[in-house]
Image (cartoon, rainbow, N blue to C red; front, top):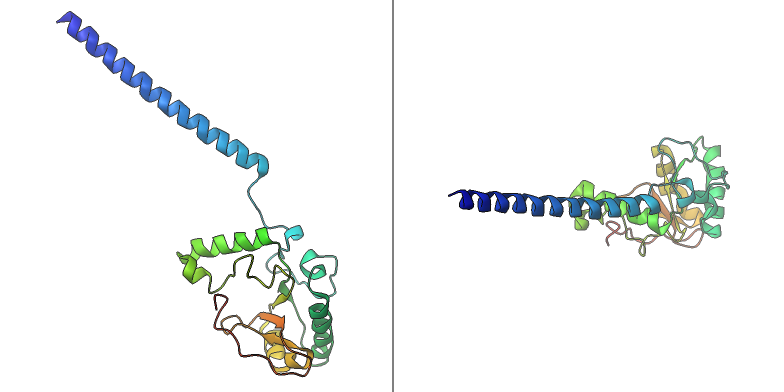
Length: 190
């Protein structure tokens, strides 16, 4: 009987030892992954990646910001001409997004997938990095409703068009100045 209890105790301690060892191994692996992630750092949107802080009053004159400076030159010129004419009508432009890095675009897509619960739904609002016109510097987002409406009515004069029906803030150089804007796509996934 004593021998049997001794064997049972040894088995229990051996099982506990194996369990503790397995638990410690998991902690080590997780710790290594966390240390590696911390060393390379998780992506955080930054000015260098094209991020514009929400609520910031950014204008097209702020050429030192990568979000403005890395826009396509023809789009930036057209937007500046439109901005001058809009100001004569009492309308001011405020840029909420311009050029973005591919990594920032992916971060936005990942965030949208988490928010909307599916990639299919998220892609209606956020393009992939290889499909985004922001990554190439060919798109700009305007914040104020007055400026959005002004561009929707007058942008064609400069070649600037709203390109997505579900994003009234998103504009691209999509025609020749004075030309006809193409039919809007339903959304970014189209």
